[in-house]
Length: 63
Picture 1 (cartoon, rainbow, N blue to C red):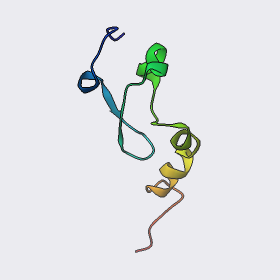
Picture 2 (picture 1 turned 180 degrees about the horizontal axis):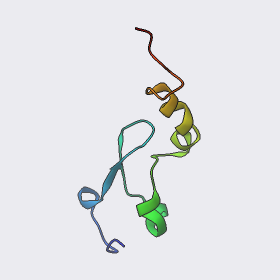
Picture 3 (picture 1 turned 30 degrees about the vertical axis):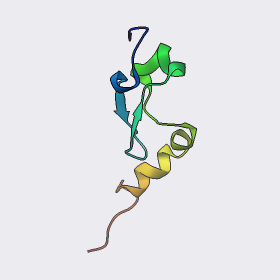
């Protein structure tokens, strides 16, 4: 759990599992910050498309 008063420069960051961009802690994620994986709803909806495009088993590269 985080302290009540944090300045903007002190907020923890994570890397989005879909787009790979860093995102900062938000007050609405206070209860479950450890479980947050995505920076927003769009990345959460598109999580399967990103994993398939990054070289999953379905996207084999021809030699």
